[in-house]
Each structure stands twice: as structure tokens, then as C-alpha cells.
Length: 220
Length: 174
Image (cartoon, rainbow over all chains, first blue to last red; front, side, top):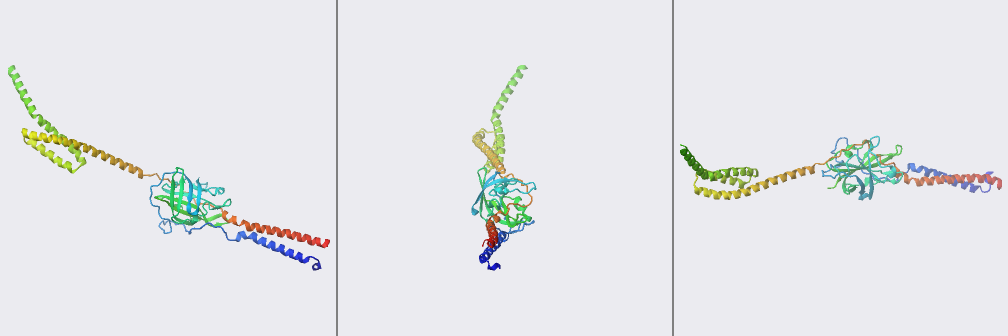
């Protein structure tokens, strides 16, 4: 009886279109959780943190002793290879005793760890920066993993001088075994450590699983 | 008695005076080696070969003077002494210069030591790793398909509602 009604083929076609739209819409809504990421920060070779063997070949070479520079706050970092020029702010420790990072809404800024040497001084100066943020997508150190040995890093200082470093090594370490001694430990010369996040992003913990670290030495 | 005594005193005073006059150059010569000894001791600090040679010359001169008190020798010695005195004068200046140089060198060493010693900043080591990213770069690209999917679902819902209303309406109107 119903099939004898006029206009029923159009109704059937309409129903089909509606059903197709509903299915396609549902699929597209579900895609973000399963689709591979199109933008990924460049990844350096992953390394497990050394326990107590500083002579491994994969580790950065010991900095050669240099006279070093006097203490002065860094104000700007530039890395020509990845086209980076960014302002530097100072960071310290949070309530838990972990190193602070610049706020996520200012992810275009790098942060100098003020409780250690300044860039150019004897010892390892540490500069941290975000790899990305919801506020701006790729952040200040997004391309840090693309650096290679010999690349130049220049840091302008408040006293008007510039500390020029050469990259020795770039590596990725699991956060669970962060190489504290290699980053903050004492050296004979003036070193620089650039640190950001990398590796797989843990959706549950809302955090990256690795740290990408650039090891550099003051150019003589 | 008194006259004899006075005359003896006068004679002895005259002899003593003559002896002093005769001994005068000798006393002067005797003073000279002591000066040269002092200079030599200064020179010993400088310790050059030239100074050693002069020490030997001074010693020989002293011997000559002790050996004989002849005027001839005195003249020769006197000439030599004048020459030595000039020479000694130069040597003294040299010694002073050498000492000054030593002081300067010492100052330089101290300055170098000051340059080498540098202060070292003691780092306060933080705990754990660095948390520098919230996955924002991944989220940005996935917004477009989600928006499209949502709009397709909305269209399908609207289309379904229209179709159902038309079906009901078609029964009554047509």
C-alpha cells in the first residue's frame, strides 16, 4: 500500500542520502583519535640515560677547557639552521623542586635556568623551551631535534656580549631516566644545554614521554 | 822636667801626625776593599761572569797593597783604584737595575695567577625531567575533519526531520 504512494522513490532516495551523511559524519568525527599526526617535531636518535659510564661513545664529548665569560643574563637565542630567534626569560624551580618552563601561553619564549651558570660561564648553562602548545601549535623549540653536530647557537647577553656555541650532540632521553648529570653536572669548560619535549605524546597523561637535549660547547 | 815632658809630647805628636799622614792613603785603600766587597755581594745576587772576573782583580789589588807600601805601587794602585771606582759605579747601577727587573717579573707572575683563577657557579640541581609541551601541535591539524563530520551529521539530522515531516504531510495533503 505504501509503495503505491506517489513520490515514494524520492523519499527513499532522500532517506539514503540522509543515512550516508550520518555515516560519513560519524566517521569523520571519529578520525582525529585514530589518524596519524601530520605535524611531528623532528626526532633525534633516542638514547637511554647512562647510569654511571661517562665514556660511552654515544655520549657528548667532554667540553674542552676554555677561559669562560663573566656572568650575565641571556636575553636572546638564535639558531640559524632552524631559523630560530627568540627572547629568553629567566626560570627557576617550582614548588616540587622541578625546573620551571615558560608559561604555555608564552610558548614562543625560551627560559634560562637562573640557578646555574649563565651562557658563556664555566659550567653548563641550561635553556628550556616548549615543543608545542594548544595556544600556538608548534612552539619555540619545535625543531630542536633537527640540529646536528657543528650547528651554531648564539646567545646575546645583557652585558652586550654574545656567547657562540657549537652543537656537539643531540639526543632524546626517556623522561623516566633523565640524564641529570649530563645536563646540570660540572664541566671544565663553558657548555650549553637546550632542553625540550619529544617522542610519543601520552594522551592520558597529556605529556610527552621523552626529552630532546642539545649539547653544545662555547666556541673558542 | 815639665819642659822635657812637653818637648817629648810635641815630638810624639809630630811623629804621630807624620805617621797618620803616611798611613792616610793606606786607610783609604783599606776602606776601598770593604766597599768592593759590599758591591761584590750585591753582584753575587746578579751572578754574572763579568762580575766574577772583577772579584779576582780586586783580590789581586788588595794583595799588592798589603805586600808593599811603595809610592810607585800606590800610584799604580791609585790609578787602578780610580778606574775601578768608575767601573764600580757602573756596576752598582747595573745591580740596581737587575733587582728592579726581578721585582717586575714577580709582579707579572702574580698578575697571571689572578687571571687564571675564576669563580665557578654552583648549580642547584632540579628534580626530574623537563615538562615542555602539551601536544598542541597535534591537535591543531585534527580540527578540520572533526568540523566537517559534525556538519555532515547536522545535515543528515535536518534531512531526516524534513523527510519524516513530508511523509506525514504527503498522506494528508496529496
